[in-house]
Length: 167
Figure 1 (cartoon, one colour):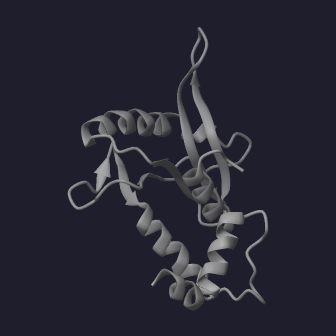
Figure 2 (spheres, one colour):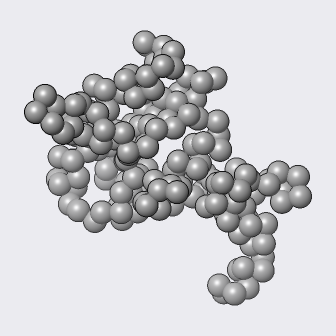
């Protein structure tokens, strides 16, 4: 399991949907050592040919600071993305989606950053719970190695009991 909760959540969600994943990928090896950048999550769906680069963050930095950081990360993603899945036959013309996933933000005034799309964790959770609400515990149990998603499945199944406690 990853040390970063958001990275783990994103990785589980995309793996559950059938994507091949790479996490915390160092790209752009420098001649004198080190790398240009680290890409948090890169996922490729072999059937749909969807390629996505996701940078989850719990920062509360200014949009100016974020813009600088995400411009660098997303530029590195665009430059090196096709080397991340070395050995897989990625189509040369496959389009890549880039997403900055934020906890502390609003996308009312910022729908994009650094060339990528801004997504809020609340939006991701709605997407996940919308998909999981119809997955019965008895017939469609989330695999046990996807611990966060399995926990969400239990929450979805027992939401009426849980809401009594939260009310």
